[in-house]
Image (tube, rainbow, N blue to C red; front, side, top):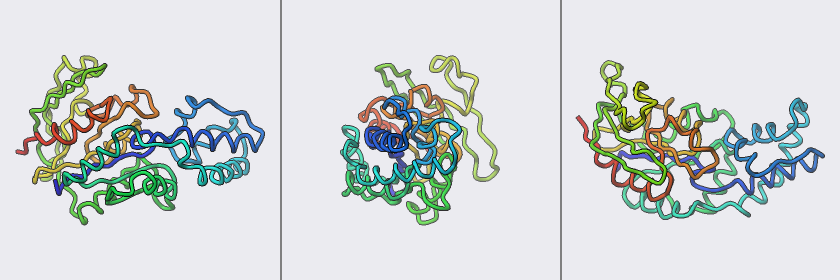
Length: 290
């Protein structure tokens, strides 16, 4: 698996951070005399960087000066309360350890500010050897820009990322508990020689409402000719678009901050950490390379 990289989103994927994020924004709003919001409302606001989070929480039409002051108050509170309520989702730490021990390279890409991203990783996953930890830093665009994926791949593969080619899969994932079975078909990925896309059929019985949307569902994950692959795991449509923009596989997790419907463009959607483990450690290893 020396050519396999799993890139994880942070908030809502690895760690449930909504309690501390909500508390910090509530503090900033209270200091400014503005009304607050429920935790559920904050779930719909997070994921696009802290400035966007604070802006969305404030009343519409406030000045940039008010946004700047509120952001400063948010950061003052959040940096000292970043891990009070936040916790890794059950089973995540064990999964990361298992992936690392199995030879997978691991990375984190988040729209959370860089210092906060690094702080949470050090706090909860000090023993996990991530090859890259990327947050919102000066000069680095937010997801869904694919730059973070490029940087993670560069760190993982020393500037030689896996090449795309024809990929087939015999895998049939029958993830129940509310999940439709997801069957991989022929992968529509760019051919290195021509850049053309290879067409393939999608079983109408799997997603009948999307059977004509080739390239949007049931896509096999791009794979390296040595047997490896690169995939992004996240809880939002932003994560899925990031993977699409980067030309890599996308796995959506339904335990995060977004409704499951937002993950409709993912290659696979999983409901539990055990299902994610099954996809990463066993099912994807069955890919056959032409």
